[in-house]
Image (tube, rainbow, N blue to C red; front, side):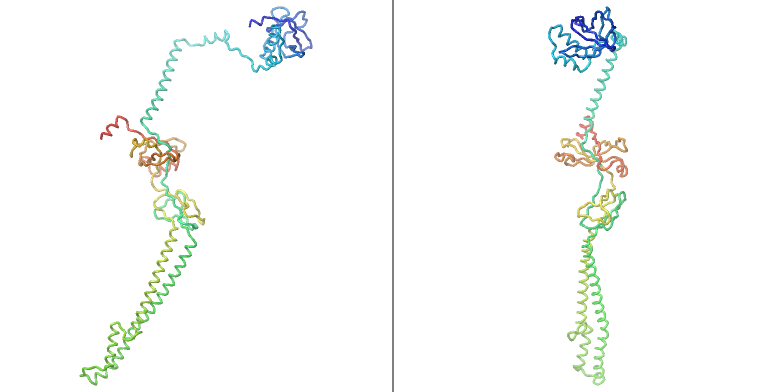
Length: 464
């Protein structure tokens, strides 16, 4: 800097480590001039700048100059250089340095680093530089490759948007049937275990209601009592039927007692006596199931038959009531509707369950599918049988499977119920029940894209 050669006459104090103290009258920002100095000042010294009755001291390094008594400042820090420059400028301008200016010089935060290159650095840089033609060829190849990569990336994105339709919020679904408790009660029997195969009609859970069971037992007791009453009535009727032959025999004997004497006494008479006609009429009516007097054999038989019929009707009524009560109790028995595998069990034996609570979930023996949502603006661009590509994660690896759209229905987005669109069902091709259960976790996210027909095929399809 040009101002480094401007020397000023102002007192500076130097302190050596050996205790020597020297006052310097002439100095600049480059160094100091000392007259009649008996001590060599080269090396470490403490420089003190007098300022408003106090001294600002800091260590510096002095190196011997070209002339006698001249010493150069070496390796001054920014704060030291700024402090000397502030004091130097005040002496040159004839103005007293203010306290804020001195504080600002002492608070300089960082050392200033020269940003220019030295001659040696410039020479080393030119020696390491490649030839100009080689650098031009390299830049052309580099930027050409970069442009090709960018064009390929953008082209792939454009082609993907033209050839595929990305579905939103896709997830795998399992055909799970939820079996709910038909009524409140206690789980008396539990035949479902997770992972166990069940067939249609198998009993999964049996729930017991104490009130219903009590009703069934009471009606069963009434059925037993009605059966005993019916047997008793039938036994009385049977005993009465046994008396039929005895009753006829007595009527026959009464007829013979009148007939025999009359036949031998007057065999050619044409008029029968009243006693004979009465005996014969009684026998005749009995053989035809009629009584000649009230309260006879057949009247009693009719009474017994009516009693048996009443007991039979009573038994039927109680049996019907028992069937109804048992049917009501059997409604608490949960059976499998179709073949499948137990997916989850939400109860335990002996536990209490509420009406409508899910107790068992059974996955049907059909492959798992994927469900996804699509905006209704794409309604004319999707169709049943449309090929799809299913991307999923299995054992930490990303895999792909081809699929087909099997169902399209209008519906809301599960993630945003306020949006209305289409819900698509996609089935994986050539994947059975076991593979889909192994690959597709229930309700796991999936990435599904539909493959559009090429634009050159759409016209022929529409014409056909």
